[in-house]
Length: 393
Image 1 (cartoon, rainbow, N blue to C red):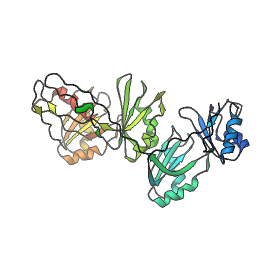
Image 2: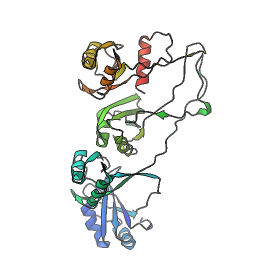
Image 3: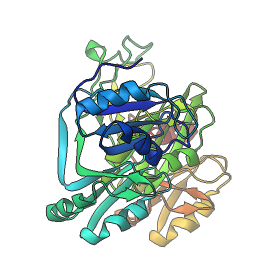
Image 4: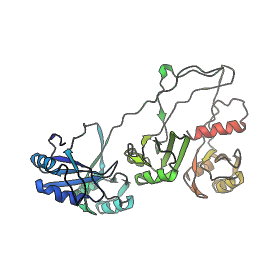
């Protein structure tokens, strides 16, 4: 049933098939007036917006095209396009948004399209949704790029406009309350704990479908920017999530736009990485707090190692950065280890290689976090496992 007009001279068209493309819609709807733009999208299912020059033309198209066939396929569904409520936005005067791009596009093609207007600081392209953004080095170049608005690329009329992003409220995750046994601590006061900032270059990708691989996640987010590391965590079939680290924090904004899109049949959730605040450690069976050990600037965590990697292989790989005092690896099956260099400069050099490839895997290389609540307890295997869990939070 046709919806009432809302005054924006725009028509929503549903029930599309792959063969009902932008030019076909433009031709079909032009019977009712001047069509100024057709924007087609494929997520979560094919649909389009048809923009008319005036509201009476849009009203006539809504009534006249409801239930009709286009290119011999359909029937299509027509409704008045409803504008979303306005939200607070952040505008970047050096950036332009580019919409309605072909699915065949990639980030390099987008860069090439706008290179004529001036030096480009960064670019991102979200293939799943057919849009991207270009960040220029100057505001003047960004303004010049707006002349591309309305150009036709592979049969699609693209949209180029100043980029603005909605301000996303930070989520506060509730924390369990209640006391622990023995000398364990109770829950956070009031039942909630404010999350603390994580790595500004890393995003959390949640609600993934069972069986989703690292390659699936990389392919979905690749258009946002260069990915240096990615890992899948699957504690049980209904709790599969991922952490993706980009080369630049500028890529995170593009990744957040994918929240709510579909990957392997599941609607995914993409958020800025946050971490739960740490609680002071306690000795087992007692109430006296155990102080955290200070951070060792010469100690590095290495994750995502290939299967059966030995400590000797790790030492050989990382010796190029400086002399190594110790490689702590529980056993050959463990896919992580800790490296202690003889000086902090060597450790810092190793960290700059985060994401480097080794035997088909992209390594997660980070400064090791301080060991919490160790006191005088021996580290042992359990200590190594807990250190790894803290570094992979």
